[in-house]
Every structure is written in C-alpha cells, then in structure tokens.
Image (cartoon, rainbow, N blue to C red):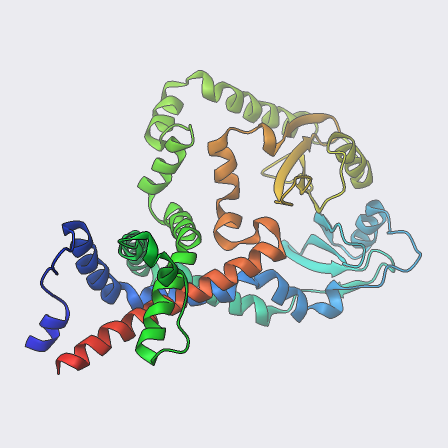
Length: 398
C-alpha cells in the first residue's frame, strides 16, 4: 500500500516550476481515475463514427441500385401506389446519388414504418436490417451512459470533464523547456526500448490530437451538462437558457414570431382540414425553386402535429463541403410559409444545429469521419500508454 501511494506522488524536481509539478500530479491522478471510462468513450466513438457507412453496407442490396437510363418515378405515383396497399406516405428521403435508393416513411395500421424504394422500377426493397441498427443502439447507449441510465450519464460526464483537464495538463507537460528540445516532443523514437517508445507515443500522439480530442470532448459535454451548453451558447453570442425562459414568461418580442407561427399553424389545421393537399411532386419543385441546388432532400408530409410540408436540403455548396441544413416549409395547399437558411442563422444557433455532426465527425462526410476515427483511436491509446508509464514506475519501486 505504501508503494502504491509513493507511485502516486513524487517530490518536486530541481528547477521544475510549481505549475508543471501540479500538472504532473493532476495528470497522473485524474488519468488513473478516468482511464477506463475514457477508453470506453473513445472506443465506442471509433465504432460509431462509421455508423451510416456500415448500415448502408449491411443493407447494400437495398441501398445501392442501378439507375440505368430510366427516369425516377414521380413521388406522386409512389404515394398513390402506397395508398392502394392502405399505406399512407409520411416522409420521403431523396439522395443526391442516383445510384442510391429512396427511403420512404409510411403509416400502416397506425404504425410508423420505413423502407427502401427503387425509384426506377417501383420495387419496395424492404425495411432496414435490424441487426446493425441494434448494434449501434447498444454502442450509443454505452457511449452515452455505460448502459446504466442517468447514473452512468453522470459518470461519463465527470470522466469526460476529467479528460478535458488531462488534455490541458498533458499539453502543459509536453511544452519543452527550450526550443532545441522541440523535435524530441514531435517524434517517436521507434528504435529505442519499449518504455521509451511507449512514452513517446503517449507524449507525441497526445500533442498531435490535443485540439481535436478537446473539441470532441467539449461537444460531448455540451450534450451532458446544461452549464456547458449555456457557456458555449453565450460565448457564441446567444442568450443563456435562464434568460430565454424569463423572456418566454414575460412574452418578450423574441417570442412574438414564434407565437404567431404557432397561431398560424392552428388556423391552418382548422381552415385547411378538408382542402385537397398539394402533390408531393409539386412541393419538391417548389422547394427546388427556393433552394436551387442539388442535395440530399428530406420531405416530411403534413401530420397531426405539424400541418405543413417541411423540406430540408443538406447544403454542401461551400469550400470545405460541410453539411449545412437549409429548411423551407409550405402549407397543405403548397403556399410558401417559411425559409431558414443555415447561413442566415446567428453563430450560436448554427452551432446548436451542428452540435451532433460536429461531435460525431459527420459534418464533412467520409473525410471527416475517417479523421475522427483516427483521432478517437489515438484517444483510445492514451489511457493505455499512460497506464503503462505509471505501471513501469510502480514496478521499479517494488
């Protein structure tokens, strides 16, 4: 027990600053406490990074189709065909890749279902494979709360918070005393002994991934802790959650537009109840007029909760190819109602809209997913290499 305590503590070295000494103690203690959870978080993050690609691969016989020379079937014909089989179309996802099938949502016997649909042959290809979906649900549950509900969520949150401190303290410990030692901190001496290679891997890879891992951790905390969400929103020019609640209670001008929109929707439900709906094809053409670019398009048809057509297009017309959602809505008859461009939103609302894809790496598609995978994999290695460094020190004391 005495040796264990000694391995967790050392005297301050000669010429060592108080800051670096405290950072060393903090880094060691927090690293040992959070290592297992951090490893699980990074590992599940690696697995979840390729979720969409793996699901598409497991459903490849339904997702990937041959477009041939035939034009895609009109969405109205898809809706009519479904009605013949007592299925009500509720949503439609049109990919930007002609070699991929549509995903249609429908209601049958008061149950919401989805299926892949070949838009060239009119064939219903079948529902998504449940096996891959369940696997990623388990991975996500493990990533969010260790499959332990709210208690696990708090453990994960605390561990990720420790990880943020570990990254900062690790960066401070990495900083070389003199410029001539900089190269040593940027390279791994693979020809050296195992302990030196292990130390270099921990030190160097930690430095190279510091910013990315810190960003991923903070966006994860954004979901877990309201105070982190508050701090980020305020720092990006938004109002705190408490202030928003007070403004809502006081009926301030910020909520007048929202209230008017809600009242309009109520009127639409009442006045347009028995009016013939605009065709889905008409809505697609109207949406393309307002959002004049080719992109993945998601269409949600009017329902009990929302009496409007909602069309969301994933805009990638930017230098980095980032996926920005633009939204346009129409009433039941096809009359234009609202248009929300991502580029017009304030910075805090842009971040809120992109918090999930920024955390998972989906923001730029496959290139950013691969980058996040590599960074998360390195994140997995840091608790392992760090533990090996401490274990070697402990054994030397024995």
